[in-house]
Image (cartoon, rainbow, N blue to C red; front, top):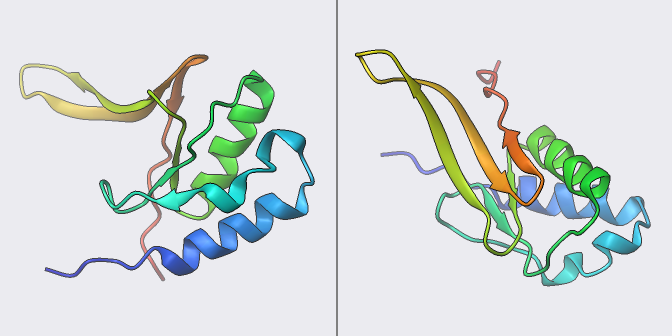
Length: 106
């Protein structure tokens, strides 16, 4: 089974975050790829401003990554008798942060 290497995505993500010069993200040198799931980024810090947390979520999504603060979880929405997955999201202190469906590589 092919395991995608998210390290290049992670490095580009950190570079993008660093450009923002946002004090909420100043400890990004302590962030790492968690490995479970493969594209999750463990932040080791809580982001206490909702706008900053949502911005971080959106930027991570651009790089195919899932940013996770401490105590955040990934969950799924399931509907119908067939238990079809209708959405995937991060449970944060600000509510659900939905993940975008990944576009197939061209």
